[in-house]
Length: 182
Ligand code: SF4
Image 1 (tube, rainbow, N blue to C red):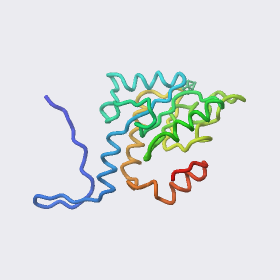
Image 2 (cartoon, rainbow, N blue to C red):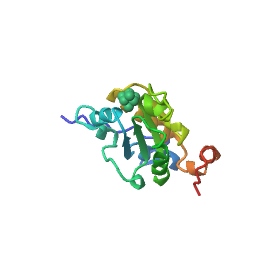
Image 3 (cartoon, helix red, strand yellow):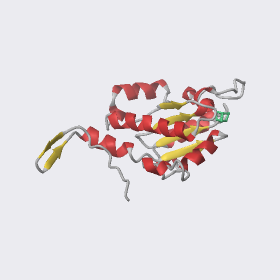
Image 4 (cartoon, rainbow, N blue to C red):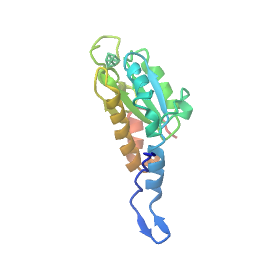
């Protein structure tokens, strides 16, 4: 028996033979259900991501089974693992190479805050070099937590302006990181 559930339609006006809604909501819905991840996995948290992709948890159920190892064909950067200070500029370069719109999930304690590695060589959170949309706690987080992080991001994407690149908030955020979006 088929157990396929359709996503809920966005808010709008329904009548006989028509449905009307806003462009923001349609684009947001489409984007949120087809996020393409770029897995930037440097250590143990990456293994949890592998489990998240595999059959039991099956990230494909969320429209994100298509991984991209090219930043230009990805819109969801997932940073998983300890990021050394030397790796910081490389991570930033990867982020800058992603096309707009782009979102970032810091998966696990190391990516979020440096984790237990409060040392001279480890970046104390990737938000020191790139903006982060969702933080997933845990050392390591279980696949369920990673999925929950992705669902939080989906909600954010669904409710954002489809043209967020031109919003003053986004411009100010990018400027605070010294990232040129023009
Ligand atoms: S948060 Fe824990 S499990 Fe994840 S990369 Fe750091 S040390 Fe490894």
